[in-house]
Length: 484
Image 1 (cartoon, rainbow, N blue to C red):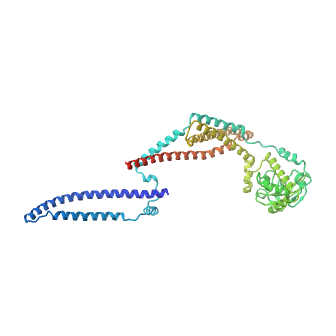
Image 2: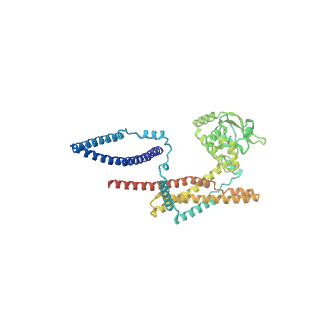
Image 3: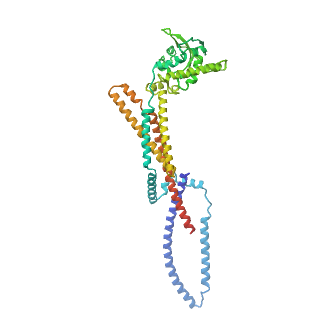
């Protein structure tokens, strides 16, 4: 709408300037014609006097004839002038839409406000804008009390980075096994049939059916159609997903099945290996839909609620055992690409790391919240009336403190890792990376976008309000002038 209005105003201004120019040309022509007419009239008056004297010498009086002729001529001229003027005002009014269409048809499109200003007006506007921006910078400049908050915020963020939220240490395999053994003890009898696991199987042994490796090569479950190993099986079975596992893993436990990242499933049987230990083994293809139908039917049967709770508890404990040792994939990622999920985990980015990052981000945001809340309260208590202006200073404190804390963390971790690399000490590198504040860095990046956008928005509103106030002042002056 503004652009269309600018198009119309530009067309009208150009038309006005053209009419003023044409009017000036007409005035110059009229002035010249008037001078020539004046000379002609002077000559005519001289001849008229000569003729008048000649007529009087013949005994003819002109005192009654001349005034009547002049009056008639003046009246006719006045009527002609009024009729000509009326022709201008006989035009029909034009709608705004038609005016916009007319402007566009004449080539007035995509007009901006600068196109409507003269060079002098543009210079004045630039000077006024620079003055308002200087005023905004002066109003939002950090004060002494703000610097105290800034230093405090930086200190708190640094303490958090190295004391509160470093990445968690992984446990050892025995720790995970102990979680299951404490609950289920040694493996009991393993019985069941397709789409059905006995309660004795569920609560009498620590194994879960989707924790399977044996038989996977035959069915091409592993990467590139190969078999699974102790690491890859966690990134291909949905029972190991930290969220989806509570759905698929629980159903698998109730039905002695395993469901994979691509939605396919297999029946699992417990068969003795070369050492005589019964291990989960892929036995045959299964239907994923039938797995859930069987689980629902089991739930509705006598004792079904107890079976579901037991399966859920077992699923939870198994996930807990893997989290404490080898780790689990990032939730939902294996449904997109199990290979990518495994690659990320091998580089340290798994569900455990994701939880640590979430804690880092939550800690950083908590400190930001405390600092911003207290700073805003103090500004309000000190009588600062313009809330948005002191909020800009609050955002500056948060933004600067986050950037400094994140930058110092990256530098410190980088130096420590560099020393480890130079000394060929992988343990030192791993230990230094443990303190990388990924969550805090993500929070800093988020504030770089949100806080800067807020500051620019407040600045725009401040400038607009000042310009609007100036415009209102000019309009009031014009109204007063018209009243006088």
